[in-house]
Amino acid sequence: MPTFLAPLPARTVLSVSGDDRASFLQGLVSNDVLALPRARVVWSAFLTAQGKYLADFFMIDDPANARILLDCDAAQSALLAPKLSRYRLRAKVAIEATDLAVHSAWGDTMPEGTIVVPDPRLPSAGWRVIGPVTGVNATPDAYEAHRIALGLPDGAQDCEPDKTLLLEADFDLLNGISWTKGCYMGQELTARTRYRGLVRRRLVPVIGDQPLPPAGTIVSNGTKDVGTLRSVAGHRGLAMLRTEAFNEPLHAATTPLRAAPPAWLSAALTQADES
Image 1 (spheres, rainbow, N blue to C red):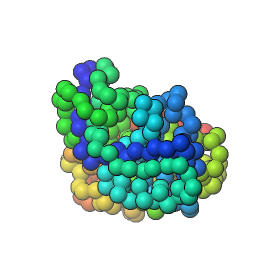
Image 2 (spheres, rainbow, N blue to C red):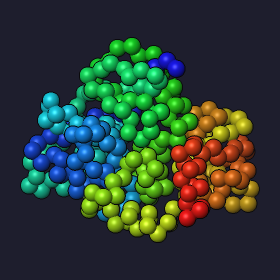
Image 3 (cartoon, one colour):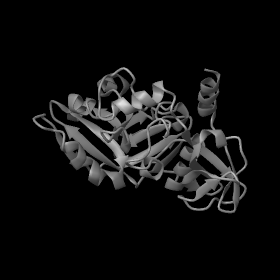
Image 4 (tube, rainbow, N blue to C red):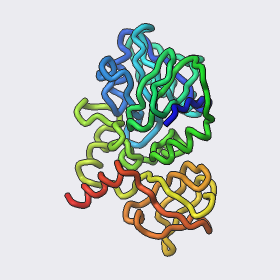
């Protein structure tokens, strides 16, 4: 498989610098910031105190510049920086916007670039590339098709701020949560959802018999509403569906569609059914 490299203009990069940058983020986000020196990149979320989704981002270690980079949805960055800053108190931390570009690459060969890290969600997702690059040969739409086929969420277009739980958006299955790091904002509800098995809906790829209607369209099983379309790319999309509807004939408006859980999600659902 050739390697594709696509710009992601809907992404931006924030810089978190200062002596306390790791400990500051550690108490706020869902994943283990202290793993960064070893892992180089960690995918994580920032939640409300009630455990509802606010934003997600890739945290990338940049030791050469003594900072942690947050590769995030550009639409969320304007709100994310002041929300994080609210918790600085006396911490030695500075949160600033950067002009660093974000690209994604996928295929057989790791691309060249200033900062290139593996996408920590799935090996098949490829790499995140931060900074200037050469050899762009794919479009943002091509990346959208790639991530949707894999079932990977992308910011607020797939997760509803102040509503979505992390397990509903598959963060537990895509390496977006540390269960051992200790307390963080929203940790109590996230842990309770896991241990009580309270996940009633999941973000899942869907395939339509024809091009899918717009994001936000209600999905029905013919007798009741069972979910909502989120990201859409042609015949494929992601939908937040009730798990019992995964094997049912479905419609979004007048378009027939079916759930198409990827192997990593199907395996988790089968394990949950057997437990």
